[in-house]
Length: 262
Image 1 (cartoon, rainbow, N blue to C red):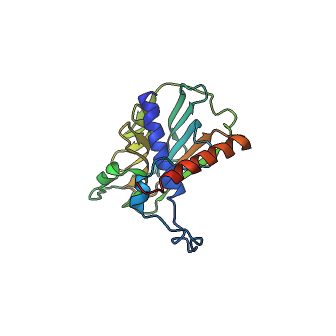
Image 2 (cartoon, one colour; image 1 turned 60 degrees about the vertical axis):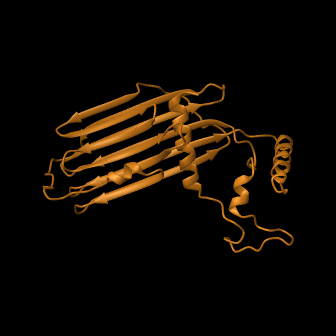
Image 3 (tube, helix red, strand yellow; image 1 turned 135 degrees about the vertical axis):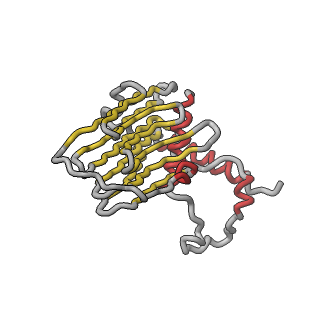
């Protein structure tokens, strides 16, 4: 599997775990254990081999739609979007990537706030893993939002495998810049304006099992409108009832072997 696909797959797995949440024991959920059953400690579960999954865990498709928009008080609008489709149905990942960036004027030009003396330290965000949403603002009258959506489907949405383009796109004008890139470590959208702030969305991963999904906005100025939107789609293989029952029984029996004494 190519490095970039491995990295995205690992990061997506982290995002799914963060969005869907971890498992909870019967005690945590307020339900008593059935008679004759005893909850196993974490140390015992850690020594067991295999996992019990309902249905198939084969990934057929992974898609990302990433959009960042920044409306400035001087009338400028920065935007960047990334569309990624990874189709696994043939056994060899088929990747398509479509980047889009723009810097436009949508109204009368006002003035940008003087940010002298305003500072934001967001260096720690780069070291975080898993799902991270960060908003840091020092100015006034700003509106900033991060939204993330994860869809787990049984069929690939129509038109999801179309498209394709270069690995990056970028624009720069009067201190403002918009960049979208697809690298071996992941994908990212970055909007920046000198002395006013930085907007980012990133999905990062590597073969070492580390990865993160980041939505971040740091704003020094006043009267800015910023939105980060990220939608991920994961399609898993569907099985007929007979195959599903056969797999579930086999996996259950395999799990039970780990309950015996050594």
